[in-house]
Length: 256
Image 1 (cartoon, rainbow, N blue to C red):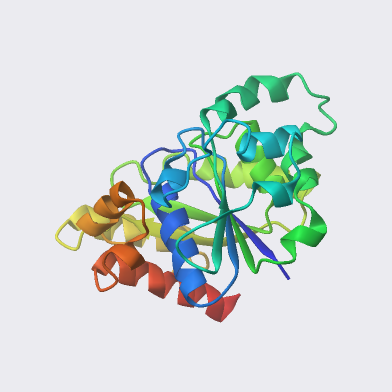
Image 2 (cartoon, helix red, strand yellow; image 1 turned 45 degrees about the vertical axis):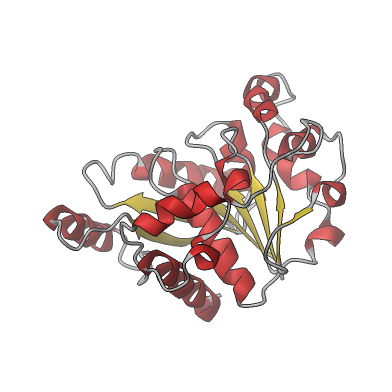
């Protein structure tokens, strides 16, 4: 079975892209075939894996608009078990274009574009969503089997989380009844900061069954690695950041 995991949170700066890159790499190191689909017009996931669309004609935008079939858009990465479909600036035009599409089908454009036979090749498909609850994120939630929610361990961390949960519930009721929460991932945790512990306690209090045991710390390596076009596991495998995502991957595999 292929697990399709949407990395979503409408708040920016919570670690969605960092989580996409490093979780995908950690699963690939465990010899699970992984595909990352970058859906964020900023394309940071693509550059963080040393992949660019090259030309605007070979990106996730073309996947959503049906210009190229799924299999033709796959690109290799430095890790043998990890592939990606990059994003390009063209994706910025998808939101207004989707608004003009028949409402009966615009929520399932991504799902319909993912060739059922081609996706069987992968154990995990990870969807990096933009920081909004627009049509792109809606399509990811409809296509996904589960949602992983990074939450920054700082002030206002819970702001917007309820809105995302309500959106997920509407998606379950209307279009994707099997959608589940993969887990809530505390990110940017600082052991020296009392606020980080307070936020973690609040998350566990409100979502006792959904918070991962793995916690992602504030770590300079997680910030440096993307500038070199690689996940932390290749940049400095012994760093706290790399090890935290390795632990997350093992946690997901253990309960997946």
